[in-house]
Length: 424
Image (cartoon, rainbow, N blue to C red; front, side, top):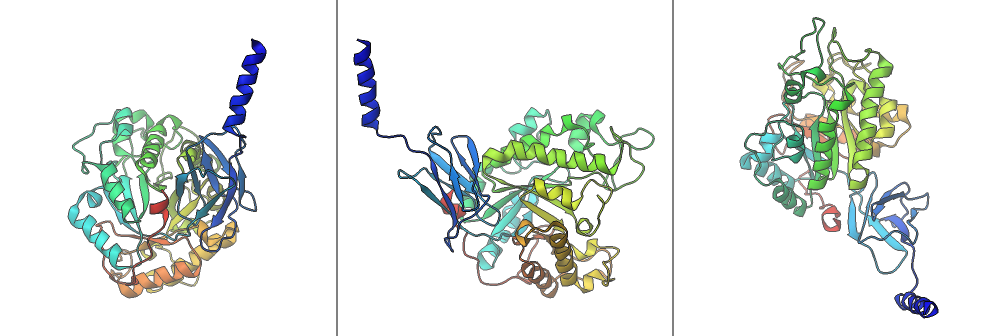
């Protein structure tokens, strides 16, 4: 009897055919060259491609989908091919983005104007506030509810449907999450808030409170929101205000030293990386422009060399108006926006030894506020974008807090839609 059962099992196995390993190669869709260090996901497992672009999950991993991502390329999501080895071809992509606030993405007027401009120019991406400067989340958020935070009427009634429509247009979508500047969370948990020398909850120039970055128990709200954004279908999670406040005389829950500040910021990014690793999204962070020049942490926990191992992309805010002290040899930044952008990026590349593709700068698309109040029009915007591209960055992003943009400085030829929309 036992021998008969064994024979039946062996026959069934033989009929099913041999078990094949899930393996393959990641290549550049245009050049057909291998891509090293790509992240490949299947069946809840993660692998990185080797120097030849090869990956191997072995025969025990079962999966219906095969996902992959690599710096400088659009994400891939496809079915597992019947024949092995699999070939995963990633499309090169350089995002050129506009920023939309919670109100901007919810406003048909502002959103449609941005989309029309994208259709007419080289733009191919959007940065959308998932959590804005005042802690506002524009849609009904389970992460917000889990944090115990009140939710008013959502600005966007159906965020999944909105994002699906944007993906159908072939857009690369970046979720901006304002991290430690969080007035609603500080009001709910004042024990987590940054304090002044008198022990009171500190408020910045806008009257907003911040969360103490040392308070690891306060990280969950942003980590959960980042994971929620990944599930919604964003390509990239971008953390802004990922820093300590740039003010003196503040009191934190730990000693305010450079080493501790840097450890706290990098610790948050480590936690975010672990949380997001299996969602096939890129992780990015915004930093002050002077971080590319300063060897220390600029007293806010942002130290260039320490940050890069934790990120796919770094986005320095290279607004000429923000360089209030200028840079060596350039005392009037708004008169030389190309100099500010190019030299700051070159400094970052030289210090880190990394390629330009690891950087995607924020550029100024708003009137100067620090020097001569000049408008930033065609000449200034083109000077910045040309400078970024000359260094070989992974695209660039235009910032205007009012979400009002024009054709000034943009190439009138529409960019080819990234194949990521088709491969998702």
